[in-house]
Image (cartoon, rainbow, N blue to C red; front, side, top):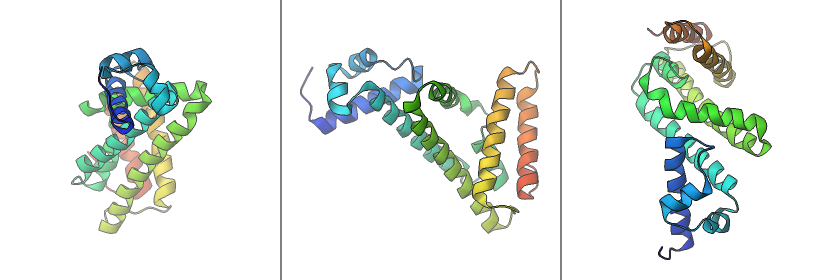
Length: 198
């Protein structure tokens, strides 16, 4: 173990925590695992971040912002309807794997742990902001038109996507993902008076 300045140690612990959390999930990100992978003492977590929970929350928010940034780049060239469908968690997309599992885990944990609720709310706000940007872009281009504000429309689409995710996960239908995609595309078309995404 070698000496690092506080900022360097903070960056190392946060980067290590993000990596572990992406690979193993929120609950499996333990102080011992972080210390082992960062070649640091467990006590440094409390010294630098105040607690393991604070470090994990900061890591989850960092992941949320990175995923939002990656999604914005990925959908920036897509037509707005397709971009919305992708951002709402298109169940037929292969890329939905690790981040979706982490998101689901934190949603469940936030119901049990009041300290996680603000973190989960911030993640929802980030998702909402990205959806609003796409809706506003579509309205500016003339390809989307809403009877409501982009904000209210985005909240309804998110609520539908979260419910659809549950139906897909627990459905015994073989074509649940394709049906969910078609339903979300139809909802986007109804909400935004747009041609349904294929």
